Length: 328
Image (cartoon, rainbow, N blue to C red; front, top):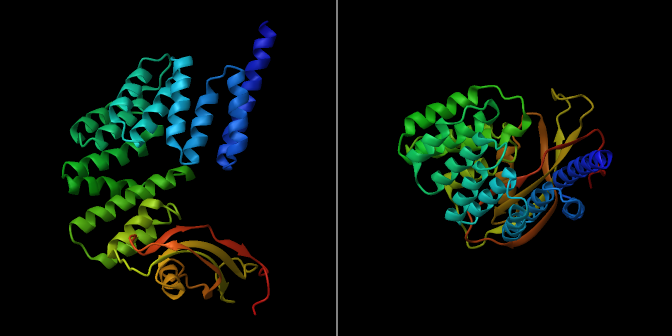
């Protein structure tokens, strides 16, 4: 029996790792299949993987149902209670989220700092900023430092301690972060600095310049892209949501790798037409090495008169040594 249990445990761990790998690749069908296998083996990670999958498909209601089933069957799994609290909070079910976090803290081997961080985020959503700051003071895990700083900045902004929040944000951006996964949080912090500067009526062009430079932390930071659109907040009854595929040629004298002749990049943009969309993009793709930036393909997806014009998403650059096809 001991050998069988050991074998099943190893099998579950392998399946769990495979499930997380599927999530990373947005292979939602594969992740759900693995979650089902793990559930049949009575392994609690099945509920987390299934919930994360439904959340990835923007179906938080189903994710909550899965986790509620999970904590009913395995009430001592703090990770599932915490994730349940997060998703309930995202759905605006704040009282139920609070209950989930309290249940998480009652579990065996709970990582209290992680739960306290999420309780603080919930307090911020409820405008209980002083309460959030108190909860954040209880957290001293190095691994959570950046998340704690980000939440503290939100709380300080909420109670009007703008100068203190700004100083903390700038100090944090000056620190070195090796983990690439921290880039999105750094982008969020940079975006908050932009919002504070806008509140203080600082020069909009300088704020825009700071925001675009800060995209170096995370090239597709939703927070920074939203701030950049908000700076001018331009709307138009003619605005369309465009998906664009662009080609950039690199100068022969470029300081980049000699083998690189250019790159391709994708953008989602709200603009009146393709010309205006390209103007928005050039603001982001303004390297001196670029000789020419042209639209290879453009698709108008939907009418967007109620959304601010600007960039909504962009891909990484795909460098090439030889172009996909010869120019016409």
